[in-house]
Length: 178
Image (tube, rainbow, N blue to C red; front, side, top):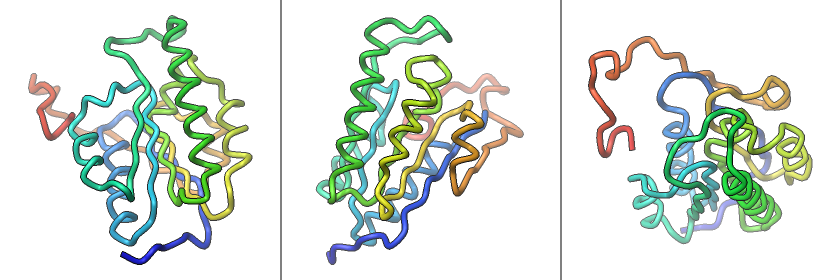
């Protein structure tokens, strides 16, 4: 496959209370890999035990993903030291890949939630975006995107839930929700 490079990289955000934020970003990743772009995904607050992580391995070397999270839930404002250290490690990986000349698209999956749960600050993410090379696309996903990042982004999509299977007592399904 021919090696492509982006001429102009923008900042995208997928946020909102509905399903589909990570899915939209991963669809973009699949499309980009199909054109020969190198995609890097940093997953905040995720363990890597999701179906997409198995698929990502099949797309190597064009796609690389690293997950930084632990099992269990976090309450807002009550993240453990481990949770904060994992978020910082994820941010460090994001910066490393952002500065890598081979990265075309960097997806920061669930970074908005990491901010909302007070594991990262808006300023830390803005500092990361401030060093974004002009030819790298950065995608931020997760509920509760901060207004400061929404203002900074070039494309913002807010997922709006109209109906959900949970309302019918249908739980998460393998291959669909995880």
